[in-house]
Image 1 (cartoon, rainbow, N blue to C red):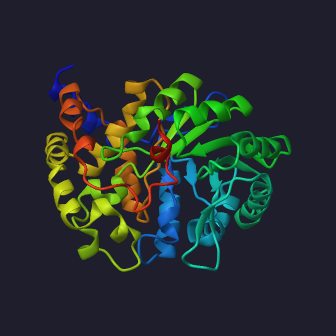
Image 2: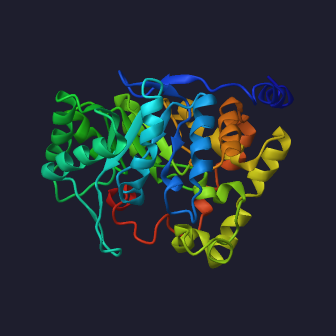
Length: 350
């Protein structure tokens, strides 16, 4: 197939409902793209509940079935927000939530807890807020190296046996940690940041996931919006309530340098007649074929029209020359993903 033919095929598939795939061996069957719900409650400035609810409905209409939240988003508010949607569509969706990042009334406190007592308390709180008696996919949000994985994953496995959780997931773990956890109980999915701007997971986690048959669920596949071209300098363009203002790669000299890296993304988008966001998502989706594992990205949005745009990216196939053009981007990115990288998998890579 020529490059022109591939572009024509992309145009023909741009408005199709997304396909489905199995999330890990024996895991739930979900749409090949999910929806990250974090921004519907906080982190990205002012929220609009009406638009957010319309976004949930639009996602389901587009074939999205994996809806991702966490107990830390809005200190439980995001789970409570999702509860009516969960109740209305319980049999049609795969519900994912997480424990492990502890926030208290002290606005400056953010800890990591993986001990058994915390796991058991966290799941009960999430079940109550979500208004359900079972969580389809339960993630350990961050890893506390001081707590043995056998204790953390063992406690999660207890929840499966008790019928409170159907499948287990991990977030921001290394390949070695994934293997160690899998030896305690099968893991359906690994969720970590993976995008054209963030590829540290390819050091060990991606290979381990492929080896074990664990699905990979990339969060922030659009580089927290930066890859879309929606903003060029977070500190100058985004509101005070937007946490991207405090992430090193999105402000000042780093942001200006990183914006220049988007030129090939824009050029490829123009050739396909699509948006830069769709090119970035198509790149992530194609990691499945490149690395031999199931990949289900969960781009977050609060606008219904963005759901349709994101879902259409699942029908785009980038050519080999285009993938080659995009390959160097991550190596040139200036600035870390977070001001404090200590709780990420990158900090624990050998």
